[in-house]
Image (cartoon, rainbow, N blue to C red; front, side, top):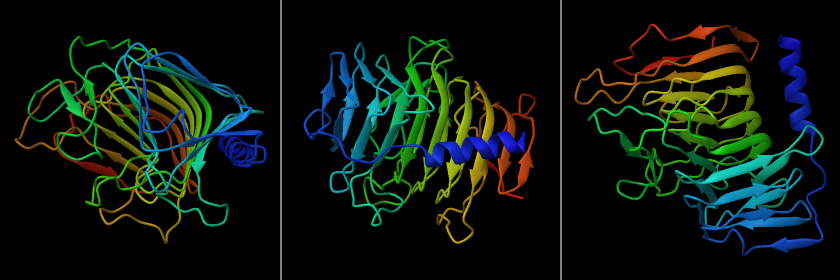
Length: 308
């Protein structure tokens, strides 16, 4: 099993052609509100500027081998709203790449925002409200996930064979308002997320806020904060995860392999659905996490699973 995970990591890290294409497009993803179906072509390099929203009813399709560069100055971020869909369907030979627009050799963790996918699967909050704003934007500014109608078998599309590099910028300048590499809020069970690598993230590589999406074959490489973070009633299955950490990198909030929360427990509560993920076959810096099943736990307060 470990051998397979290491091979997967090496393949994903090494894949990707030169970062030059015949055309550069800096308008399609320029603080855009996507309300129609659009396709990003592998023959074009895309510069992603500001907050880009795929609205309900719209679909963003990204061809295998496409490269998107997140703008440092405008904190380029892609948000798939509830009812919107993304079909980023790469393959082993032609993964889709999201990376920093800064020159190679000058890139660092937190150069741009990240990818946010939101759905209507059930979530948990300390107040009992069935919807919430996704973190990172500041109070009253974040897009919403969960809510009514609750659709546990919701589909936000397909996110397969994707590399996300140098994301995790702080959007507001206030600690705690960083964007994760791949953020999933209320994502439903019919969404497909597999073969995704997040490298050099300024916050968590992967974070699930509620929802019940199942993911597999995920790689976290040298995140500043946590590799895997589950909150607000996440109850999906995640199979085959591989992470490498750098002992010299850590967030001020402390950085862990796993962080598993329910909600902030203020006020004290036992609201449902509870955070109950099933995590199978994890390898982190040669410490092996095998068949974590939290289905019998209630997690009334914050818990973390530190790297061994």
